[in-house]
Length: 427
Ligand code: AMP
Ligand code: GLY
Image (cartoon, rainbow, N blue to C red; front, top):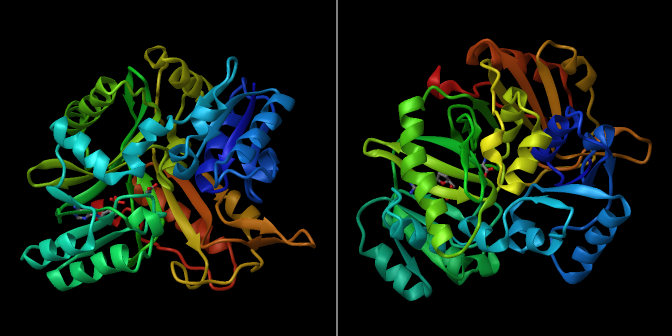
């Protein structure tokens, strides 16, 4: 079966790495991919960030030409813009939800309303469509608040505020200065929740829900979870924060009611439904939904997934998840992100990278590329903020973390930084 993966990050490299292990995997393409995916399959220069007719036609033409039978859409933007809807054809499977279902991630105000209607535990919130009312509201509140642009803002549209002053500044930034463009036309202002954050991803085939082993990611740039938020500096799985009983509760209180609520609106969710949860004193509460695999959680999860990912994805697309067996490697996987100097602020690109082969020689280590490219001479260079995902399996979290850190120490590029404490919250 020929497969096309849309996206260019470590998540897509890890998904491709796992798909490639399947005896059912034929030719593997990435659009646009990175220097790491180019070694696993073929990178093709198809555009998928802005889904207009031209972009869809180009992808569709390519898929017909190369007899692609499975398309995997990694990132949220094309899903929210309806790429899955528009690529659907008989004889072709598209992994990823239709736009109406992807709205769970793309419209936080709508997601909040749906959660409220379905009695899914989440932070108390109010939605505002004009800056004046939003400002009046935050000024009237004493408690810490979280201000969120309702639309997609590349993970940057959420401001956790300790006081009204910060919340006023956040509302101004999002609604008045329009820092995130139209994504900030509507804001959701909610209570700040306290607790540990966990990521629970589930495969949903329209009907069946298959919860994956839980993971925890670390969004802040510096050790000890300090400094500004990033796209993710590392993740590990499984996490002892969620035992079987809690997982059953999360399934019953979060996933089942949400998928049912979508059904009532005649929306079928097929793909990965990702719940970002806060484990509060009053139980798990939803911070956000994503309509796709998490990055970098997926890199850790793929190291542990024993099942054939082609089978799993096809089952998700065809509503037959009840027929697959999702076994996990009992070992722990740790993923450490190596980032460019300056990230999440501005950073240079084109910086030469060395040492990946040495790192991959260490037992249990896999290196996934996120922001890499080849320069004119064929030298591997940096091409983004998050550059590499160094992943390792270990008997326990400490062993996995140590092995990932040892692999990172083999890799060099000027300005590289990474966190050596991934998983520290449960150690
Ligand atoms: P989101 O994109 O909605 O998950 O928000 C990004 C990050 O902001 C989350 O991963 C949390 O760390 C934080 N956050 C979001 N909502 C809340 C909340 N209600 N209380 C505390 N922190 C939050
Ligand atoms: N790891 C967070 C995300 O994928 O949104």
